[in-house]
Length: 61
Image 1 (cartoon, rainbow, N blue to C red):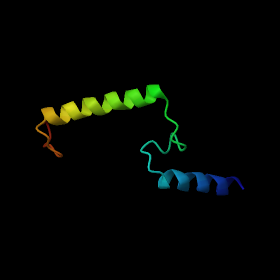
Image 2: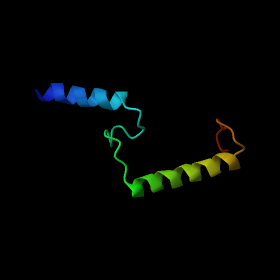
Image 3: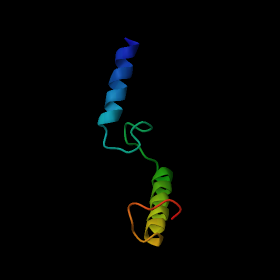
Image 4: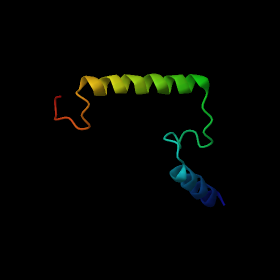
């Protein structure tokens, strides 16, 4: 049944370790996607350091 298959797929996505589980359930990441993710993480790390390495910021910081 279609609904059963949809439920199984949803459960598999929820149980996946991948943060992109909803997009890539088999964890097949192209080199381009991996590089893009790495660059994004570097950018966010830089921003984190610039903001004083605080997990939470007040509004406007």
